[in-house]
Image 1 (cartoon, rainbow, N blue to C red):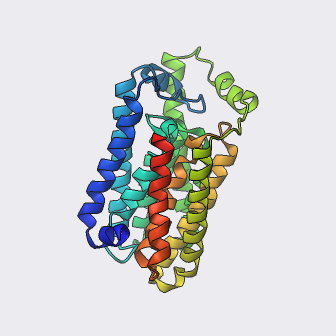
Image 2 (tube, rainbow, N blue to C red):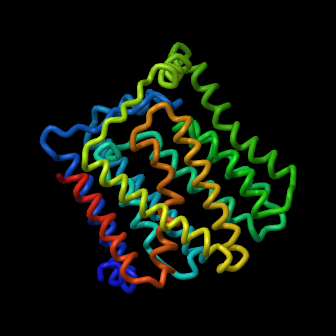
Length: 324
């Protein structure tokens, strides 16, 4: 019943997503004894994140603002290009739900800020579909991935996604590929120059390498975490199977984008593998393609009982994980 209500009332879905995520974030920030999780050093902007770490309310406000902007931007891109063939706020809802489902996700951290720029890069890639020349779009997409990598180093693998996207969406043009590389390298040039002038003695290399070589992985989970992971995994498998089998039901443009989303999932999984800190934040970027895959399933499936059960299970798993 709840899923059907949300499908028939998009505005209610939008409002519910904002209210639910607000409650989840506020319950973590103001919970007695709760503290925002520290950042890792796998970012070239570590001094900035270090400065705001102890400013709890500011850090939470920045994180929540970035989350809402990112989810709204992603939802707008999907609706603008009719990639689900109907206007919906499901991508927004699922993204804010996924990125609010653990206390460790509450705050302003590198992976969250980085994923916003990856969304902007995907938007530039999609916008190049109908253009005869797309040098500026290719450059902008590379630039956004470069900025994302400055913020969160494992995002470097998404340069591969841009090249795959150019192969899927456009004909081969070496100039466009070169533009993605130039755009990608430009933020590093500015950052390198800034560091030489203003912060020449900051131990960038040692701090980053210490995370990759000396960080220990802890695989201890509470029953709430295990339950939530099982629910997410079962839902993801079911939705992904449905998604793969429905790709050919779309027009050519949507087919290309749906295939790009599958590659997005693969590359995002690669970023998790190379991230030395295997906590919930490492999976943040997966929320972008994941929200699209789940939206496609819940909007297009003709079954009634199973989607409703999965949807209620997702909500229940998040609530239990956060409050019990």
